[in-house]
Every structure is written in structure tokens, then in C-alpha cells.
Image (cartoon, rainbow, N blue to C red; front, side, top):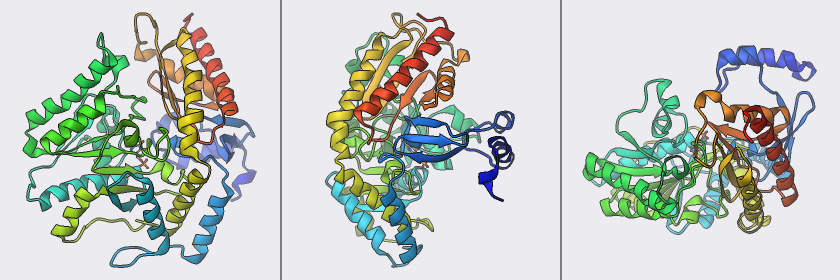
Length: 457
Ligand SMILES: *Cc1c(COP(=O)(O)O)cnc(C)c1O
């Protein structure tokens, strides 16, 4: 069957009948088909009707070097020809897995000298959970099992990762979370900070970790996990006081600190890793997404010497792994992706040029009648839509204001994500200043259309 000869309507019909989509209502999909994306280049997508779309989300926060990188296709081809697959179980390895590991330890903070490979961020967080518990068992503290996460967290969609995630949407699907996972509030100052200053609220919010550890008993708590900036939970940028206090509390009680770098890693925040932006010293880091810019499915866990020393000294088999752990083609592509980032100085560019420019443009939106707050770090931007900005009054969720704005984006060939009533961009790190202007004009247009529709002026 040659799909290229099919009309959009035929493709949509086949799609909704036979393809169960992630995070989609299958009934709604049958009624209104999906947009069919056929091609991409730079920051643009094209659909099956030939429409050109500006993708301000870099796919799902992942295409950090932009689409259409010929060298990444070539590397994938060449590696497939040379060695398309071999595993690294049972005392075997291959050059691409070694080369990527070496590169990763060069760019990660000091003390990270080992990587475990997965195929995704979810598997990375499953691996984190198993590793943390193994660590405490090896230290003869098997009762230390509880992992504290946060409401609004997104750590993935496997049973363990969905349990670590902090939204009832994921939990209600199948009766999660699994035992020994606990959630505390997240540092969402604009929504929950009331009359406190951001700094006061950051401290207060971090101290809820202290209370939770006391309540559970420190002898039962294994680790705390957090994204430096919560992504899918609405781009929650923590006040500056938050992470230092979290770090202090973890050290005080001797519990491990895990940085989920799946979004914040690989330049997104203007450093290689989000933990560097916030001065966090994690014990483990989960990575995926920007690791390969989405060109291949690959993730991993970076393990600090503090943890690795115990795994080595106490010994015994690390009884965990995936058929495709360290897949040679994925490793080769990820390595080349990091080389592109280095050659084009993308991390510097985000820190010193495009990140600050994005922030400057975003701040112009603070005068918009629909906008309560804007948030930026590096190439991340959020716009919180409110009913009354002077009174910090939110819309009732039944109005679906964010979804409406997203629909306007869709109609205008623009991809901006809606998380409740917060609009998010996370564009390719290659986006130029001129392209930021182009994106900004679309943002402005869609906000104006939304304000009109809800009679906000
Ligand atoms: C996307 C994401 C994950 C899950 O990664 P998958 O590759 O979709 O399994 C985990 N953590 C964070 C912070 C993410 O954004």
C-alpha cells in the first residue's frame, strides 16, 4: 500500500481506526482525525496538505538541534551498515556505546563517571528507582524505599514512572501510584504563593520536604526526585531559594537527590544540565529527549561516584537491562548530536544570545490583558492566561481557555502547547533571533484572538 497516494482524509481514517495514540481520547480521534505530519526542516513542519507549520515545541521538547540534520541521518546509515545491533549484556560491548559514555562524562558535572543506557526517559526513571533501592539494600538499609516526588511532576509513563509523576490524570488510568511513592507540593509561586514573595514561598515549599520526611521517618525515605524546572506540569520555574533548601534537607537526612534532566538537560536552560543552572548536586540524573534530539529513541541514567562506588565495592550483579540498552545506532546518533551542539556552541548561544532575547520578548507580553505571568529560563517560555491579572484571578477550568488558544495556534500553523491555561514554548536551541520574532508574532496573534473570544480587554 502506497500511503503517499492517499488523501489526508484516508490517512486520518486509517490512523484513527488502527493506531491507538498516546495521551489521546480514541473516540474523539475517530470523530476528528489527527493532523498528518509528513516532513520537517529546521524549526518547521509540513503536513499532508502541504501547510508549513512553525514548531515552537521542538517536537515534544526534544529536537534541540532542529530537524533535517543530514549528518545525523548519515551517521545512522553508516552505523547500521557497520553494526546495526549488538547487546551489551554478558561482558560484551561495542565502540558507539563506549564513545557516547566517554562524551557524556566529559559534559556532565564532576563526579559523574558512569552511564546506564535506556530507550526513553520513563525507563531512565524506572532505572533510577531500582538503582536507588539497590544502593540502600547494599548498605543494609532495605527499609529505605520511599521515593518522594512532587505534584505536577512528569517522570514518564511506565508503571513506576507514571507513579512518580504527580497528576491524577496519570494515576486514575489504572489505579496508581504503586506503594512507597509519595508526592509533596511543587514550588508554583504564581498559583499558590498568595501574599508571600517568591523567595519566601520557595523556602516554604522546600520545607514541606522536611515535614514529609519527618512524618514518614527518615529511615524509610530513599530519595527525592525532581525536574529542575517542571516541564509538562506547566513549566514551574522554582524561586531561587527552592533548590538550595531542598539540597540542604536531603543532605541533612542522608537521602539521595535525583535530577530528572529529560527536558532540562542538553542545553535547554543555558547550561548543559538544569542542575547546573540551579546549583543542585544530584546523586543520579535521568536523561533522554535532547540526548539524541529525538532522532533516535535513547535515554539513560548518569550515576555519581558516591553511588557507583557502593555498587562496585559491595558487588553482585546489577540485574537490570534492556535488549536495546546502548543500541549502537542510537548511541552513534546521540554522540553526533552532542558534537553538533559543541561545534555550534548551542549552550552558549542559549545562555547569552537567544535565551535572553526570548525573555525580553516574553516580558513584552506582561502588558497583555490576558497574561498574568510570563516565565522564562533559557529556551523555555511560559505564558499564564488569567481572567483578571490585577486580582490574579484564574479562569474556571471549564472554560478551557488554554485549549482554545491552542486551537487558534493550530489554525494559524503554529505549535504552542497548552497545559491547562499556561501556554508553553520549548523551541529548538538553533532558533535564531529573527525566528524568535517570527514566533512572537504568532504568539501575539493567538493571544489576541483568545482575548477577543473571551471578551478580555
Ligand atoms: C518526557 C519526560 C519523561 C519521559 O520520557 P519518555 O522518553 O517519554 O519516556 C521523563 N521525565 C521528564 C521530565 C520528561 O519531560
